[in-house]
Length: 393
Ligand code: PHB
Image 1 (cartoon, rainbow, N blue to C red):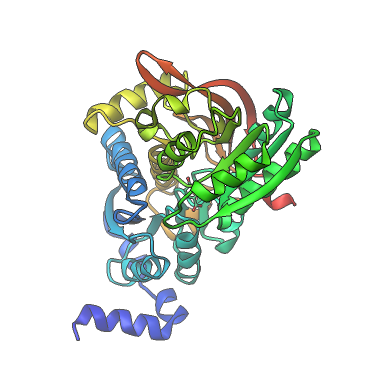
Image 2: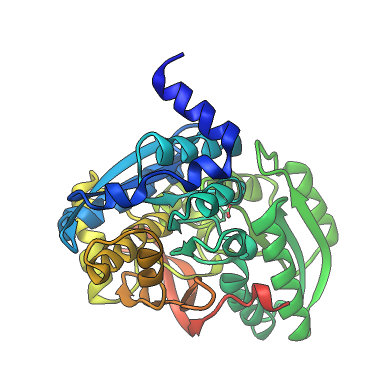
């Protein structure tokens, strides 16, 4: 058995003790801070890893890599979308690579499997994606730089009944964020006089939407409200148009996960007019965003940043700002310095709420339009400083 494997085996066997006793303070004295990033780089959700890695690297490219006297060294690993793998990698990163900060976690189950490791080892961990409301409660060492599903769902749930949509069938991925979206939509839509005709849940992995879309058609709602995680939207759009739902007069409303910026152009005309609510559009009309989109595209072969890239970019900023204010100290001091930060993100102004450790941000209502020959989510209404409403239920 190699020494590395032996260390890991010992760490796994001893669990909390081994993780808690890793010599973090010794490492914190060197001139480097190691940040372990766990992304999904292979399998059906690989597009998320590409955007996340590009966003994280872009932050360091634009801002330099040294903060509070410490040089940030990224250690990036692929979890292949598998919770067991994410957990094992988190353990290895802490015990073998001696990382002092963790980040990443593209799907909720991945963040949940890493949570006990973050807690036992007292490692500040920035959730770049996992957007189920309760994820933040899974570890006191979690800080979230992305969004929550209830936070981005209530906007479209309020917009719909004011715009001629009185009955809806909801269709969501059958796991944490989908269930959050389903219940947040239902509650807010019904409060505003709407009716839910059916609530459909589709499998997260390898979904075939055809039978579910047939059920939507049969129900004849004014609209279908959809949440699907990043990477699945274009397949859904294709099947939505193949089943003729658009021609049957059923409108499509969604969270912005479905019309994500980097694949929106591939979806084609069927996406035109789709109304979504979300916290980031590549078309967000601020000087900070224009600069971000231009420089990101330049550095990434013309690829557009989506909300994943922005969350990783801002996640790295949270880490960098915290290092600046602790003058390079890690551990609990770094965690505390992550709380309460405010800054202007490419998405707009944001706050990391010091009590909840969750992000507070503007949420926009957007419509897919053609601008200069390309499809964009064009923002037309803003809900200011939205907290996650999910945990107040
Ligand atoms: C999640 O699994 O929490 C998740 C992933 C991708 C999204 C939204 C939520 O776009």
